[in-house]
Image 1 (cartoon, rainbow, N blue to C red):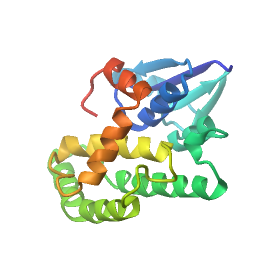
Image 2 (spheres, helix red, strand yellow):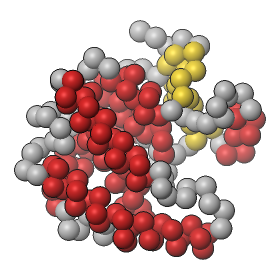
Image 3 (tube, helix red, strand yellow):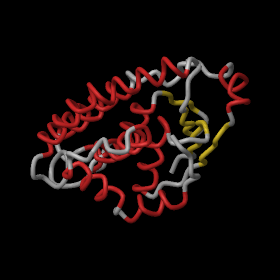
Image 4 (spheres, rainbow, N blue to C red):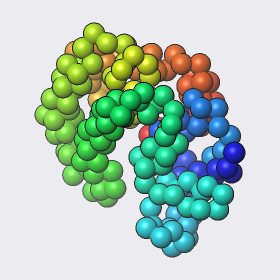
Length: 199
């Protein structure tokens, strides 16, 4: 088993999908969390200047979703067939497209609040309706068992609910899916153990 060291801020953010996968697959790793004050020094040492970084036996991997695909490769979390794997990737990318539109690093709080509100009020409902329709009456988003796309939905929606607590009021099936992910024993254990952070 390789030695894994995950470096990210002390928050869920873009590293949480990696932590969920490690928890579910019961893989040991070092969860190295850095403070904002230390970021400039750390950033200067990274080839692309971004985190999370997963160090695998001394080799640095970057981009959270690429890391997630690496860790889930040859597991059922990736999808059980080539077609399912494509569907998993498509749902993850759809969610990530939306999350990437938020101005997370915007310094002007008024501009940030306005853009968040517009995305959650006008664009969010369309995405949620599409996801709801895609899920339909199924238990999981893809296939007949949990995949990391279900994990990513739970992680993204947890963050969005911080900003708009009534976001899912019209979508009980998507709420049920969140609860199903949270009820997986390894995920329940991680949620209880992880540092409590707003984002």
